[in-house]
Image 1 (cartoon, rainbow, N blue to C red):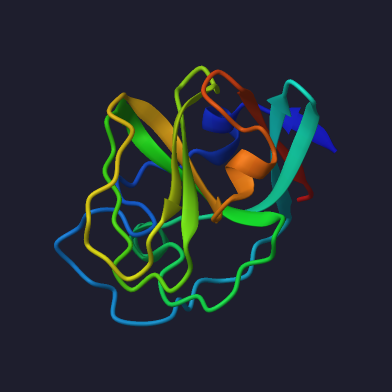
Image 2 (cartoon, rainbow, N blue to C red):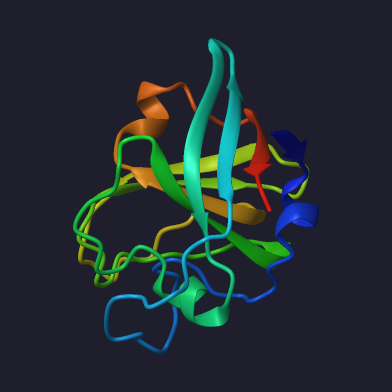
Length: 161
């Protein structure tokens, strides 16, 4: 297992996101291919490292759909979205059945804000009001339960191929 910088390791450049504000609705469950390896986001909290198994959206369709239509998400799992630029990003929960925490991360790999317990199935716009390059979505309550707050360092660990 090796640690990688988020931007270098992922190389995703589509400007969409899981339930990100978009004029198009993807219409149903994803048919994206299975990942070829495992990836983890590691949060370096004051009380120790917290590791989340992540899915990475690697094409425009997966970025646009994200976690929409999912009925379950493991407590230690989430999704990572990589944007081509660091700017203020807006998300919504349209067609998203699960309450989520949205963790916004800047280009220097530090948490810049958390939207906690985003209500499912709404088109309410959510943001943290500052630029970010990445957003990590996890089950609602995860960030608070694990001490993930502004300033926490983030890194990606990837396993195989």
